[in-house]
Amino acid sequence: MLKLNMATIYYPYFGKLMDGSYTAHDLELTWTYVTPPDKLFRQVIESSAYDVAEMSMSGYTMLRSKGWREYIALPIFTSRRFRHSALFVRADSDIISGAQLAGKKVGLPEYHMTAAVWVRGFLEEDFGVKPGDVQWREAAWTRGTAATAQGGSGSRHTDSIERNLVQYASGWSPGRRDVRS
Image (tube, rainbow, N blue to C red):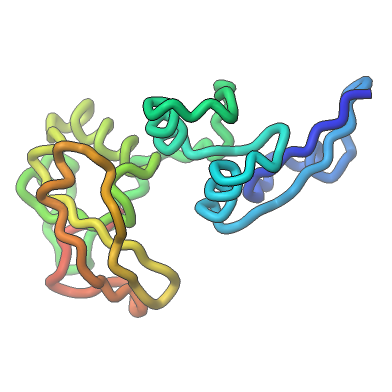
């Protein structure tokens, strides 16, 4: 019997696999739910506590490029989100297309996070807006508050990222950003 300890955040579509209704011959899977995602990713990076674990695609590729070899990626994309819906504009904005983001300020938690990588990809692919055409603003936040982002992604675009406090308690800070990712 192969015993595996697996960690992911919660996804309802894992359904019967997570509750043990479906099993595999000669496989015993112990599932650990860790939230929020950055807590799980930190555990994976710092301790290698799991046999199988969900990991940020961008974080994984950045770590691999620096020689990290604790895990090997499998092409399983657990979040399965359509990232075109990951951009939010202020209610008073005239922005109706990704093409209008050239020259605009876009706030995001971390420039290197996987969701932001996908957003930059579809902005360039679908709307012709290159990453350097946008004024990226990076700030870490939690529900109702914000914290100044630490470190950087090492990208050539992070030189223009303004690290500052952004208040998200009411859902948006008027006048601070054109778009939030």
